[in-house]
Length: 147
Image 1 (cartoon, rainbow, N blue to C red):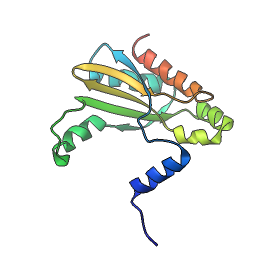
Image 2 (cartoon, helix red, strand yellow):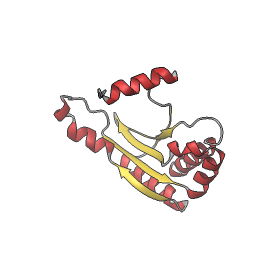
Image 3 (cartoon, helix red, strand yellow):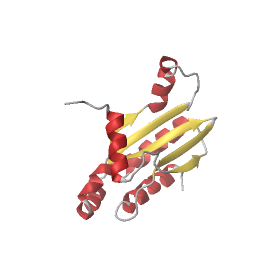
Image 4 (tube, rainbow, N blue to C red):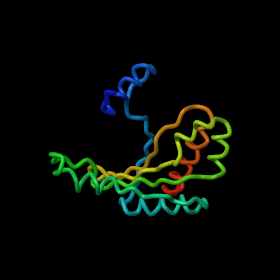
């Protein structure tokens, strides 16, 4: 049996499925303050809703630390963190509507600093039941921005 590398298998699957591999759409908001203030505000806004943060991924640190190792001198972000969390109530509703909405869990909000500008955002979700998740994420971000 011949083994194919994962990228070849993924490309073949996407071709058969009629899809293409591309970045998802994102929704971003400017933040008037420091990166540290934004991460604190997001963490607080998530916890204030009684949600549990499963993981904070320090993507910016990883990219900055490993750039030279992969032959890059470009700084993509000065700072970038991703907060991963879930809502039992919202998750139950969207997965009762379509169990395959499992693919969207956990939910995430990122905070990034690039060229001195701080932004907060999340991925855009498909129409239908997942719009409840998108509304929750927008509400958390607006709360963190003091709106």
